[in-house]
Length: 175
Length: 200
Ligand SMILES: [Cu+2]
Image (cartoon, rainbow over all chains, first blue to last red; front, top):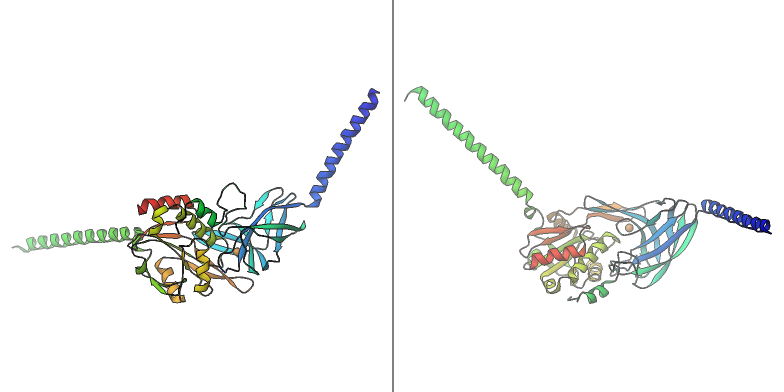
């Protein structure tokens, strides 16, 4: 009786260990990528260009190589650099994603440039975005539009992402 | 007088002359250095541009008596320009009554695409009192030069172009003299605090 119980426990432990090892194996070869907190800025005035941002984590390391969305004529990967007070924006071939490291596309760094927007991006709306990775293939996400000068995804700790009207109301706007 | 004495006096005069020249030269260099170091002599100057709201010509003289907050940028800029203009609008929101003393200007460095029609709604999207200014290529080039703004076209793969440009907010006092500037590292709270201390 005792022995049978021991045998069962040992078997269960073996299955658990084996399962974990198998899961790890799958993770290494499966090249999983997680895309979270995708957001964009509302477009000011009649502007037909925009920027979208997101946080991307590739568990096994990967490269973001292309982006597409039905709301714009073209979507490109861009990088911003500040060189001695001079702002430069350059199209890049890929955004490197080191294994297991969350890479956040954000103002002042990488952004997804939206060119020839078919309609203005309005705060509160959302739109689909397809990200293509070298190993993981494509991942679909939904982009939430924030204010014209939003600095992060809605619901972030700071209230910088609220649109101007909200801020104005809070600060006793005097226009 | 002996010839020797004459020679001695002559020598003294030459020496005194040399000394004076030296003092003047040193003073002149120091003066020039001091002047170079003082940014008031370098940033800003007369400009003639077009108010995007009504297409009317405006000059620096129209803003005398107001604190000028000037940002040079362009509307095909999705990242740096909205960030700067949003920071500026958040700072303006913190000024209370002093906001009336400010004239925030968004001057385009891309007059080719940033016509008055494009500029007016763009600037107002950030704050109702931010005024968009455009102008002819010559007018814009002159303003850039006065404010020592760097702006250059960078061709893109799709045949278009982006602009490399200085991303700075200049603060000019009510007499039109440069006082200070803000960069992308200055947050709205710091901007507001500085403007409050200057304008009060
Ligand atoms: Cu871009």
